[in-house]
Image (cartoon, rainbow, N blue to C red):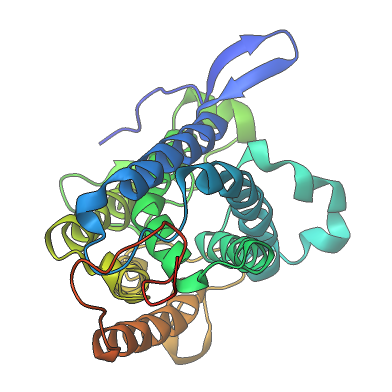
Length: 295
């Protein structure tokens, strides 16, 4: 199946270009922000504990998260996948609009942002994460779709009928050749958009709205970590390893190594949250205030 002729630049105004990749990040952050704010405003979800913060506090947190996503995602890509860039092209580190972001780096960046925000505002870190985690797959879905449009992060060769030859006139113009070759490959970007984006979003939607697990500290965050890690490891078996990282120990990929700690940490958070005493139903008080703390 040939790769469609999709220009990675949506609009070109002289030297200024709006790329699908950048638009995906902006849209993901904005939509995630509105979704998380909606969770906070939905009083039916907080039956045993108050909402972790106010919608106004979420308005402040989104800037911290945006910096964490972009800064952590880019630095993670450089450190985990292209460390040679630090010496060969240090200026290229800031050219985020050209692509090259790491999910695991983004998670680290967002985690640091949430730690600092929780400390500054004296809020419960785990419960903040329980609101942010359900919104994250929105941006991840859009980001992986943008990876597909860019013709990057393609999969291993395949003879399946939906295999795609990642080569078109735009790629030839950008690179002078087709880096993925002329063989059909797994569209692993779309696999990730489906499983780590849409399906993970639906799992977390069940956790927040049906099971109301936002009342249990850290459980939703744990579910996010476990399912993302499992999905990522599964898809790594058909995703082409990054150049220079094809022969890591035990036959694992960098994505697998980075996902294993996520699964372990997520499993611990689920176990911890499900075994923590739950306040009586109706104990929810002011947003951002523990249910057992006087108003």
